[in-house]
Image (cartoon, rainbow, N blue to C red; front, side, top):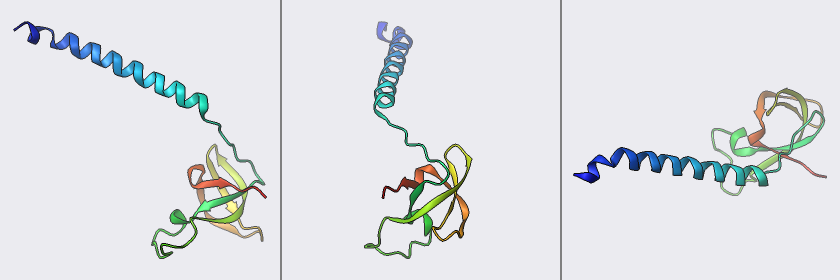
Length: 103
């Protein structure tokens, strides 16, 4: 009987512990992550699995294709790309699917 009376209190304590744990994990992650912002003119590689949604590439195809040049920053994390020859890539790309290209 007394355990049933303490259920709400035990739930509240567990919720507080979960919140504290999530905050610690968040601080740990944010301390070690190093953002790599992309600017206009930077060279990037794009994820070829996202570039070919029909998945006709095959298992041994490269995972990244390019390099491409960042033509415009539409908003933070969203970019318009162009080939090195100057031809614009038709859609916008999220930074999650791009990787900076180092020469």
